[in-house]
Length: 52
Image (cartoon, rainbow, N blue to C red; front, side, top):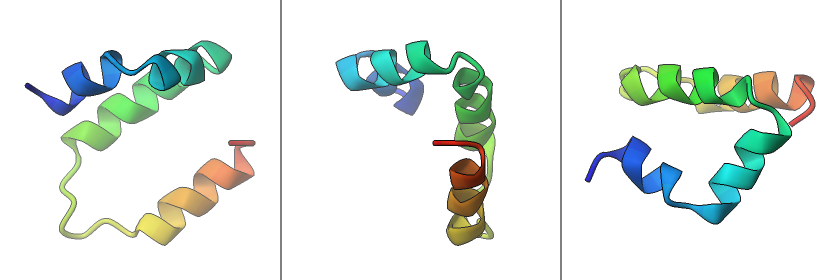
């Protein structure tokens, strides 16, 4: 089962997307990104600035 399929099955995830539909594109980009060089603190800060 792919990560996207697992997320789509989550009731929380569906409500979270409904609150801000633009999140779906962000999640799609993150699922395709390489995690080895990811700066998670920076990614979280960006989301916080966006009103997460």
